[in-house]
Length: 286
Image (tube, rainbow, N blue to C red; front, top):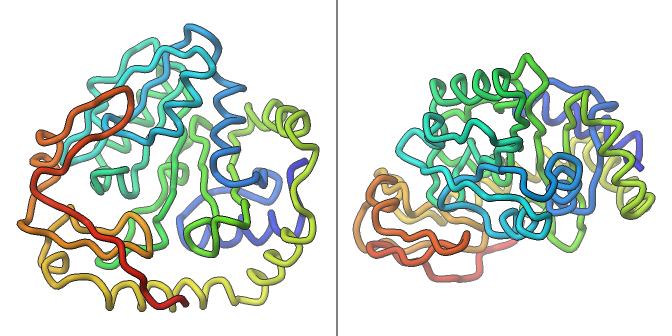
């Protein structure tokens, strides 16, 4: 149920190189998209009445999973440095965060906040779900290493997928499981679907092992960077596209704090950019 061995090896090698993730193939569990990885983690970690902390505003599908599990959701605010760790509820058993590029505000979590979050998790025994949903598409500066790579206490579960870099229809993702959770996650995965699509996993493993995936990412980043509006390159943080096919248009620059103040939390969904709008248009495929 953990997935094709060659693919797990290729994923571990890629993440160590690209994201500073500390893992081996034995730590990788291949899933049917990131959503299945979240589902497995929530089912293993959270029971009815347990508290789960999630960024506010945050990612609605994860909120829906937690609600279905009967968890008590604790929204935690986000500022210019990312998740506000001082606002974390002490009883939380799980924290969901997007430190590389907060969804939907686009803030990158500062180094100080990352250290504070890991210290908090080690002290309370909570597990941090790190959703690394689009770190491949960074268009300026050097990306910070993953939260998982800084973790020395086995408190971080790192989740990613190939939906944005290749195609959503592949339904291939992965979770880098902390040692204490690996057995329970594998059991849950076996109960859910026994195993994933073997042929697709074999093909992707070969694609990565032969270096084609890394070349593909470089081409995509170059293509999408050329399509970014000049205003974003001058520092408008709200204009970063959420998807590769989105080309934002911004009426005026706004800082993350301005965007936070312009939004309202309604059951996990975010409502209303008051200063920025985005329009969909087709870009050249890589």
